[in-house]
Amino acid sequence: MRRTLEDGYELDDDPTRVDVDAVHAYLTGSYWAMGRTRGTVERLIRNATRVVGLYSDGATVGFCRVLSDDTTLAHLFDVYVLPEHRGHGLGVELVREAVERGPHSDLSWHLGTKDAHGLYERFGFGPPDLERQMLRRGQPRP
Image 1 (tube, one colour):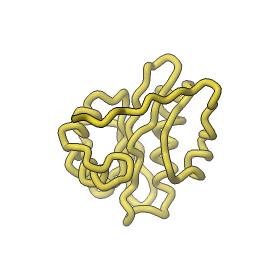
Image 2 (image 1 turned 180 degrees about the vertical axis):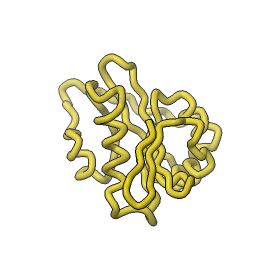
Image 3 (image 1 turned 180 degrees about the horizontal axis):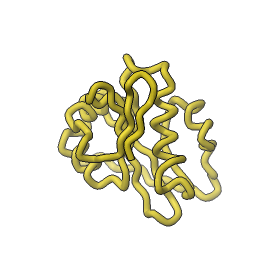
Image 4 (image 1 turned 135 degrees about the horizontal axis):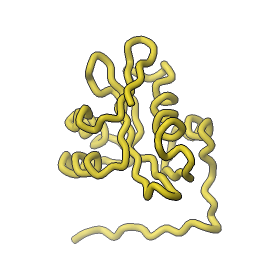
């Protein structure tokens, strides 16, 4: 899939096009992936079920990745648009492409986030079903 947006932006799900250094540079400073190594970012992109990059003049300016069992559930991770490119509906198009237009559009979706709830609610995300969810927190490594 390759889709042109207004103002010369482009969405593409070709994982070989993703600038791993650019994605790592953003994610390592985010609240959810602070300190994630470049090697980990590269592995997560390589092992993703689908990635969607947002590009401007060939540069990666936004990104998200999907992990799915391809039968019942998909997880949305690492969604971002660089601050200087926000305010043009690009985050909406990035999530729309990943969730509604991709091969997992008929599955249930999960994401964890502390912000942008309004964005995700547009695509049917809501509070988790706490009766069916459990959480095992990771343990610090020695």
